[in-house]
Structure formats: structure tokens, C-alpha cells
Amino acid sequence: MSGIVGFMGKRKAQPILLDCLDRLDYRGYDSAGIAISNLEGVEIRKTKGRIKDLRDVLLREPVPGGQLGIGHTRWATHGQPCAINAHPLTGCDARFIVAHNGIIENYPQLKKELEQEGHIFKTETDTEVIPHLLEQHDTGDFEETVRLVLPMLKGTFALAIMSQASPDTIIAVSQDNPLILGFGKGETFLTSDIPAILTYVREFYPIKNGEMAILTPEKVSIKTVTGDVLIPKRIVVDLNPQDVMLNDYEHYMLKEIFEQPKAIEETLAGRLSEDMVYLPELEEVWSEEKVQNLRKIDIVASGTSFHSGIIGKRVMEQLLGIPVAVSLSSEFLSEHPKLDEHTLVVFLSQSGETGDTLSALREAKKYGCSTIAITNTAGSTISRKAECTVFTKAGPELAVASTKAYTSQMAVFTALAIWLAQKLGGTGCAQIPDLIKSLARLKQDVESTLIMTQDAIDQFAQVIYDQDHIFLIGRGLDYVLALEGALKLQEVAYIHADAYAAGEMKHGTMALITPGVPVIALATQHQLLDKTISNIKEVKARDAFVIGITTVGDSLVGEVVDEVMYIPSTHPFLMPVLAAIPLQLLAYYSGTVRGHDVDRPRNLAKSLTVH
Ligand code: M6R
Image 1: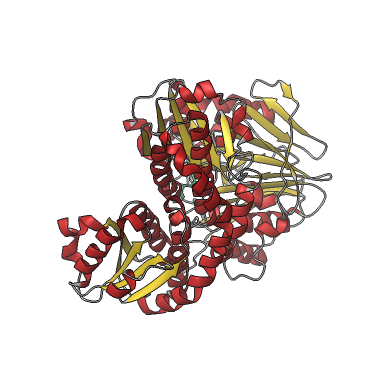
Image 2 (image 1 turned 90 degrees about the horizontal axis):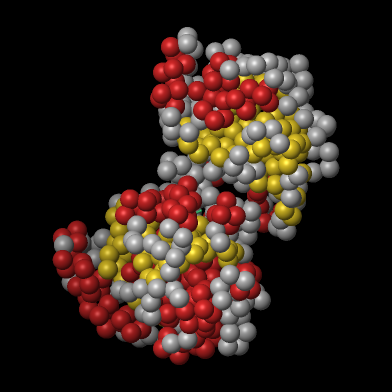
């Protein structure tokens, strides 16, 4: 994925575009570029690397003046990360300048046709067909030309387009790929993600499929692609600009790990009483009768959100007593379970923009399923397309590795399961009072976990940072959490980490256990403790170095491991929220001691809008 920004106003565009790109570079950071118009023409600068490299290019080759322009930070999908492939891109004669996010699926065919017409391609990107198509169909009227070309493009895309012949205009288009207008006093912004422009504006308008935004110094018009003028309904996003600042932290990842008590508190605020969960956002759609008619639930998500989905599945199954399945978004189209109007599909996505998750949502709607989105991002595509949305209120998550969104998702998912169980009745309801009490205490428990584990994990990371392999084992929800712990270590520390159901080691993986290899044994599910301890002994017998994570009050795990770390005890469904914290810290400290850019790990991007 990539990020697009745009600015039009009375101030100099260059520093504003660079500032916005800096805040957006979690969407891609392998190359970057800007195009700025000084009303006589448009100048482009681009480079391989990150926004700081673009700043260096601009120091060497400044762009004179200019109060409007577009910028792009790229995560390569087609063509290597290099200056030539960086956006904005032009065609044969630089008449049109295009920044693109997404994939033009029919580009091979379009490219062939354009080459037959004599167009010469300079890059390996799918994007380059767009400026060539604009040249090919140029009517002399910028807006009309864009309107002619859009129907030729297949795929998901967000586009910011400029034209040498109309240097006072930016045209923006969004097709299943986010592009949002931000409105300030006498100035307009474009962004792929709201946090990038949050320090400038509070009022936004997400451009919808089939719409074009035409930005000129006089006004911003939203039109349908057939030319009808629309009146945009702006949304006001109430976020604190401090939320997107590093403040005293060295990295966003650490800041976001430490923001978890607040994220949990805000996510649950107003949703709990002593014995009930309230989700008013669902009340209008979900009558008691509709809940009673539910036959099954599917959960769909990617990456870390998928891991909280697996936990959600187990919680829902136990509370609701109806079948719950969980699928990876990228697998859902090819292998989805039977869907019908008695199926509820819950979509989990921090960003609300993950391409695979959105495709799965479209698929579920085709079958008449009910849909609920759980997302952290107001105004996101998923929140607009799902029947109902329950927001996590973790605040903007800017580090590529998801931390506070993950734990907030688990909290809100538990609340959703309780809310449905309240309407459904049944045997699972017996656990609800206890669970609600634990939810109400969760913020304090998260705070205590941070205090109890930070220093010990930091020291432990200094010991294991140079290991090539780490194993994480656990049973039940501890196993599911192990999957997430392994993902964090892989993406931030680049350590080969693998998670195993503790009882499965003996069926093959035990062959990989060599003397001294670190094994993290998660032992927070009391009802499974005896069996987990047996499995710990099995790896200890092969001389692994075992670090146990268990709850305060347990005296058994400490006796069989090399190092033990204690965390507070809560309801078993919520133990993964607490036990996630030492694993997040371990990934963070291992990543930093290995000298990695933990906020922007190699080859990754935060919001994956392509398939
Ligand atoms: O925004 P989403 O929750 O849909 O993102 C899904 C994954 O891309 C995301 O969780 C990814 O796995 C994170 N980098 C993991 O830390």
C-alpha cells in the first residue's frame, strides 16, 4: 500500500505536503515523491527511500513557490522500489501527473493497447497506464478527460491527478480505496488516512465510489463521474492532535503499548453497567428476534486482527452456544463457509481499509448476511459498508505493528459476545456477571501488567536478541495468543518465531528444540495448567531455555521454568489481553536492541488496501 496526500491553499504547499507524508509513511516507505504547481506549471521531485530522502532531494533541487500539490509514499506492488517507479508518475510528455494507491488490474491489456498507439512506457508500474490514457483521450478539458478515462480502469484505486494545462486544479478519485478530503479555513487537504492531516483539520469527507473531487483555489466540488454536482456531508472527527505525536517516546510502538490502559478505558466507556453491556449502535438493527434467528457467526480478519478474531470465536462459542467460524480475509473468497440471511459476519480491522477484508464484506453482503464491523477508524470504508459498526476507541495507531488496537478489539469483541448473549439467553449467560466485572477492571489490570513486566522483558530482550529462533507454546487461548506473540517478534525483531499448541510439540516440532533455544511458555489459562506444565517439562527435558508467563498466585510454573514472569489474573477470556503485553514489549525491545526501525519494519506497511 501507499499513501496519497494533497494540499491546496494560500500557504506554501511543500512543507505541508512533506509534513503530511511524514505522518502517512506507515502506509509505505520504499519511495516517495511530490508534485507542486506554481500556477505556471507542475514540478515533480521523487526518490527511492523515505520522506527524509525526499527532503534531501528537495534541498538539492528546490521547487520554487507553489500553493498546491500532491505527494505520495509508496509500498511497491508492481515494479521495484526506485526513483523511476516512485509516484507521481507521468506519461509520454508529462501532461498529466498521477499519484495512485491500489492496483489497476487490467493494466497489461491497457499497456499493450497504448503501446500499439505509440506510447512509450518508462516504469514497471501498473499506474503508468493512467497518465498515458489521459494523454490518449485528452479533450483539452481536464475534468472531462478524467471522466472519459475512469471507466477504462479496473481494480481498486485512489488517484490524485494534476495537469500541466490546468495547474490550478487537483482531481481526486476513490474506487474501493480510501481518499479523504479535509477542510480547513481557506484550504483543502487530501489524504489516504485521517491521522496524516489531523493537525490541520477536523472536518472530513471520504470520497465515495463513483465520485470525483475537483479542487480549485476558489472551491471544492464533488461530482458524480457523470458530472452531477453533489453536496458533501462532512464528518467531524474528534481526535486529539497529541494522539499522533510521539511526545516523550522514542517510538510509536512503545507509546501505543503504553496507551493500552487508556485505549481499553475509552473503548469500554459507557458500554458497561454492573451487570449489563450496552451497544446502542446495534440496537436499531439487532432486535431480540433477529438475534434469536441467528444460526451461525463467521468472523473475518487479517493479521493481528485475525488473531483477536480467533479469541473472539472461542468467547462467542462459549457464551452463545451457536457455531462460530473464523476465516482469514484473504482466504474468504475462495473458501468461505455456507452463507445466508441467518449468518452474521463480523469483520475486524484496525484500519477499516484492508482490501481483503473489504472484499470479504462485499461477498457476505451478496449472500444477504448480516454484517457487523469492528474497527478503530471513524469514517473508514468498512464502517460505511457494514450494516453496523462497533468502534474500538484506541486512538490512531501509527506503528506498523498493531498493539493497542489488538487488545481493544478483544475487549470490544467480548462486549459484543455478552451483548448478543444477553439477547439470546441460554446457558452461557451464567458467566456474564463475572466477565463484566473483569471487563470493568481491565484497564487497571493492563496498567499493572505494564508495570510488572516492562523492566524484566527489557532485560530478557538483551539476553535473547541474537537468537535465530524462538518458540512460543500454550494451550487454549494461550496458544492463540502465542500466534500473535510470534507475529510481533517476526515483524518487529525479524526473529524467526513460531507458535505451537503446547500439546502438539511432541508430534514433530520437538525435533527443533536444541539446548538453549528460547521457549516462551504461556500458562495463564488455569484450567489447562496441569497439561501445560507437562508440556513445559517436555521441552525442558530437551534443555530448552524456558520463560514462563503465568498469573500472580501460581506457584507451579515457576518451579519448572528457567525464568518466570507474573501478570495479574482475570477472567480466562481476558487473559490474552494481559498476556499480550509482555509479548509486545519483547518484540519492541528485541527489535530496538537489534537496531531495527520498529515503527516501520522492512517490507511492511500498515494498511494493506491491495489483495
Ligand atoms: O487494519 P487491519 O486490522 O485490517 O490490518 C490487518 C493486518 O494487516 C495487521 O493486523 C497486520 O498484521 C499488523 N501489522 C500486525 O501487527
